[in-house]
Length: 306
Image (cartoon, rainbow, N blue to C red):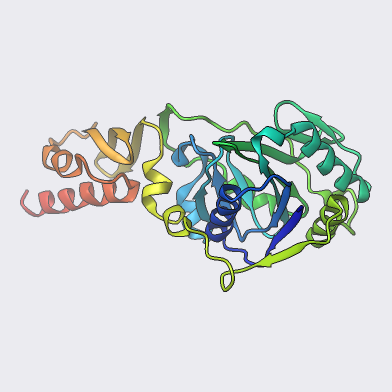
C-alpha cells in the first residue's frame, strides 16, 4: 500500500538515518518521505567535507555537517527548504515517474518547471531543486530538495571551502544559479510545498514519525566523526599561516581522516626544527586547529629556551 511518511523532527542526523531505515524496509508500493532539517550541510557519500565547505563557519553558526548514503553534491538545508524521498523496489523504479510527480506538485503551486542536466529542476533557468538517487540490493530511493525560502547568505558561506590549498580525489560540487520559490510567489511556504506533495501523491495513508515513535538504527553511526570524516577520499592539503617571524606552510596527506604524511616548513630567517611536531601529528586524526595547536605549542616552548 502506498504511504506518505512525514518527519516531525528537524534533526538532520535523525532524518538522514530515518530515510535510510525506510529505504532499507522498502516495499513493492512506492512510499514518499517528506522532511525538513535545521541548518546543515549534507554531503554526498564520495565527497570530501574539507573541499565542500568552511568547517570553521559551520562551527561558528551551529550548522551541522552530515554525510548521506547516496552520491551527488553537497547541499545546504535549513527550515526554508523541503526534502522529498521516493522509496520503492529498484525493479519498479522510474526516474521519469519521480520527476513528473515533483513537477506536478510544483505546478499546483504555479511553478511550471523543467528538468535539466542530470539532476536539476529549473524555473526560468534558475535551479530550485537538486536530485540524487541510491540503490542497494533491490531497494531504491530517489530524493531531492526544494528551495522555498532558504537563507542564501548562510548557504553561500557554508558551502565555500576555507582558504586552504587542497588537492582532493573526491567529487567536487558544481555550483549553479539558484532561486527560492517564494521569490516567484511570496505565498509559497514550506508547508504549502509539503501540502502540494501530499495532494499530488494522492494517498490518505499518512504516518508521522518523531524520536518517540521511530528509532532508526544508524542514527548514532551517521552522527559520528568516523562516518563524517573517515569516509572521505584520500587528499593532499597545504595549510598556511602568517606569523611575525614569517610564514609556516604545512603539507599533509590524509586518508580515512588520518594524517599519513606531514611536512612543516617556514620561510623564517630563524631556524626551527618541526620534526617533533611532524612525529606527533603522524597517524593522528586530521583536525586543522589541532595541527596549529601542536605547532604553536612547539613555538612557545622553543621561544622559552632561546
